[in-house]
Length: 151
Image 1: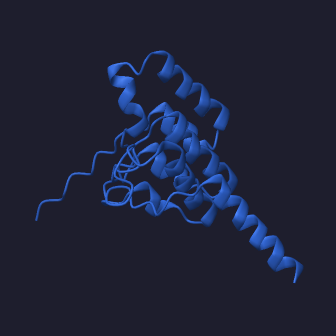
Image 2 (image 1 turned 180 degrees about the vertical axis):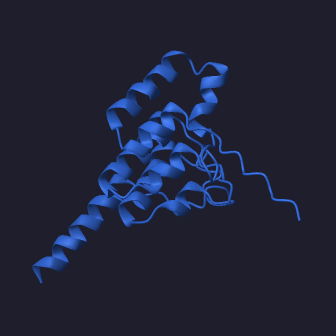
């Protein structure tokens, strides 16, 4: 029986590398460069470029970061500043939201949905992101938690 050839792994883009390193400053520089270049044809796709063993976008990697605070900030930056598409699936047919391992990161997706609006993408069917989370919702959540602690 013939051995299967090894699966070719698509190399990471600089955006992937900044996300994986949790380097928010470098990420913001890269997003600013892409925006300043008016998203030149090949650079425009970098935000949604799929790479690595599972063909994941930078948004997939951001959602899966261990540091909740950094992950939430990077998810927000990629969506709001970088215009990342949360509907792009990886090689295993998973959307970035599926990779979010904690509430803080999931809330970052929902807040971005509130900021970007319903016309940005198919939030429900494509991105699988639940209802938008506004700043008022976040404040109510904090107030409720504070009230619960004081009991």
